Image (cartoon, rainbow, N blue to C red):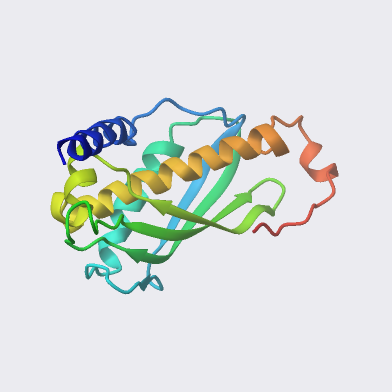
Length: 195
């Protein structure tokens, strides 16, 4: 029993090291500049077992986290980014270790190129889980965190995953690459659907 508890404690300490923070180092987003960020939460589904939460409780935390991450880029090209909250599960108190579910959300992400008047991504879906701390690994998120703390943590993770995904698209697909004057008008419109 002592060995099992020691192992769980060690795993909890490792998990705590991976918690996402709002002020992590910027990614490479090329010439990206956020013209507008939109957050929509009105149609989100609350999944079974979730703690109760009003749609309005999600909006400001996600907006604040998204703006903190995306508005620090001052590139020369404007883009609109929208995130829609599709569903959520805020982990309730459970039996520590044996039943300690993690909170999770599903979001859709839209990225619009203002100059080219086209979507780079239209309805790209992402499933995002809350970070695990040492306390929540042992006790469960529902015991270790309030509903507000769970929402705030998930909001930060949403912004983090969106930013990382956009950086991957910049690297792999050339999103946000600097353009010469007049280049946007000459470029053929690609397929605008994603996911």
